[in-house]
Length: 140
Image 1 (cartoon, rainbow, N blue to C red):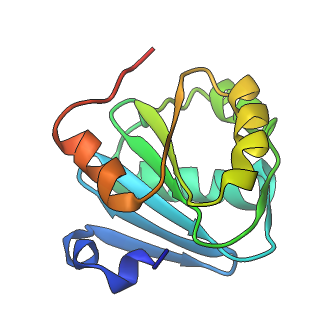
Image 2: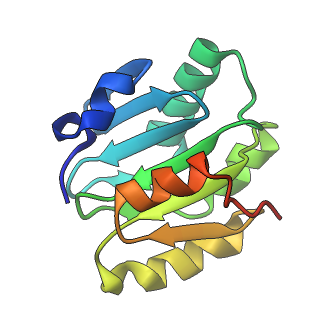
């Protein structure tokens, strides 16, 4: 898989946020994160920073956003960080994971235990974006 920066989608980004642990691209109605190789992604050091920056830029609590985790690199997610996300009164319209790695399914199952809604998995970014555009998102 290739980075958003290497696709035609990149020119449509409203804003790019660059961090030492990865990059986030803000679009109309969704955001895409690309976390760096080997990061142990948690609420305090990573997610809260992204959430604060995105909500400040867009002026939303996230209820109208889809978060796409574009897993072009191998990294770990501390799943109980979702508890802090929801305790802080943030919301998401949907959560997509884009990965071509079947091995990561176990991590997805564990993460799904902590996330309030359904997590949708896609094999490529184009399919995930198209599902947003044509309104195939099922919101629980």
